Image 1 (cartoon, rainbow, N blue to C red):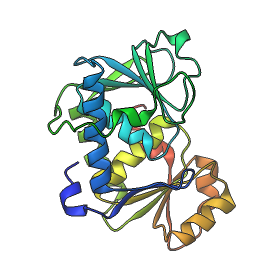
Image 2: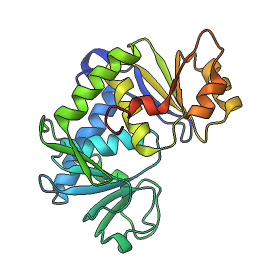
Image 3: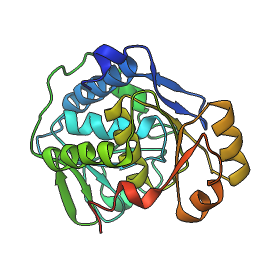
Length: 239
């Protein structure tokens, strides 16, 4: 969010699966719009919102929109909530969800776009709970402090193009947050394979790739591409 004024229209997230490219200014605008939309639907401070999205441009928008509204974005199974942002309303009733905002338009679920375009919440919370995973709740200070340490340890900078070959939602979110905090451009691979990652890395001139261990090991060898095991982006939070 702080990077938006200086990064402006430079690309923040490119989603290979959908073809969507979000600039830093567009990303910030959408987060504030989602937060305002959730407020219109009665989101209370500290209330949980289930987020069931694959790694891509919509995931950080949804999670940060919830947090900016003062809610807690709940990833993974087992959480109870009244609201959900997901691909589709596949199991909303089983989880007790009353309203689902579906990124993929389907009958019976309000579209994710319903949260956008009706004003923006300009000022969000800078402290308090923000993210829930597997029975643990992380707060803003904890998440932001950890990201600042990761930026230094992994040497991610504003000129980097980061290839995200990550499928797990929490790892993908941490990688997206890490790159965006540094002012980098993230290219999110879809169902990443060795050949696909090599092609994407060349086409997008990637300087850093983050992938599961087996894939990361096979991507080593390109002198223009630094490769990091995906576990490095979460190991400081989940040993």
